[in-house]
Image 1 (cartoon, rainbow, N blue to C red):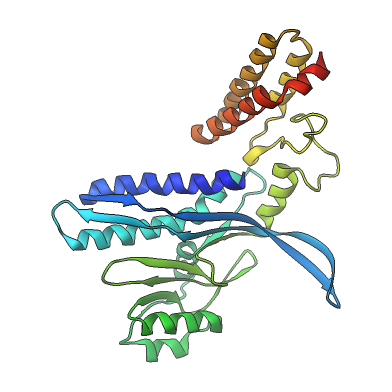
Image 2 (image 1 turned 45 degrees about the horizontal axis):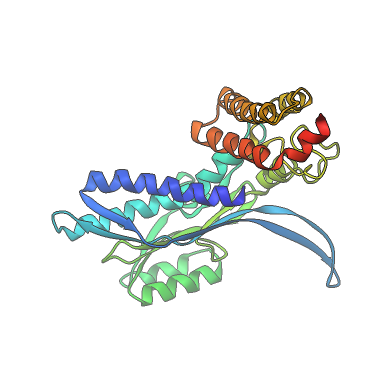
Length: 312
């Protein structure tokens, strides 16, 4: 699921870039790029001894997002425009993709990216500055943000870049920090950062608690094990917030009445169909439903032989 989230981010930004390139009259070709989506583990210590661990959020970090762009008419300004718009979209998707995948009616999941942090600051009436060599000596002393961010801004501006940042930190659902964008003016290439040095997004703790208990299945006091069998209890009943229990229960019942291998195949294909329809009925996107349903169906087709043998 972590891998799927990172690859979904890549496919989403590619989709936006195709539309954007067409509208601006440019050709964009992606170079090898990389994004990380990972869990963040918190640890409580006593005199240097770890006492317990706890879920402390999810993190998306797009370290490398590079494309080669050329305008059909040779207009260099179009290349700069493409990079600026693509960068904003990429930053927004860093929080939006995990939010869409892991949210349910209760709870909803929220993330923080550079684009979202700057928007929250602006909506809250916090001044937003564009810092250049011409105004750095005036603006930098009035910023009320982390010293490490200030040092990062100073280094970037001294290297000829421009930085967009809010005057103060924001406090959004317990996350305190700021978002800032480091831009190369001549190319439009930017780094979209949040406090802590991450070129990405942080998914807030309420969301990871849901992820751990419902999606992964760790920490549930009464295990919900409709999906999976003996030895595969870890298979989630709620992948990406989708309720797969009924489809899995019907699959279990089908196995008990499937004496031949061809009957097993029928049960496995039916699992994918039922899960897809349940997912759509729950209001999820067809792409997500198709991906999850096909993954579950393929898994039982290839690895469900022992469970089928035990059932019959």
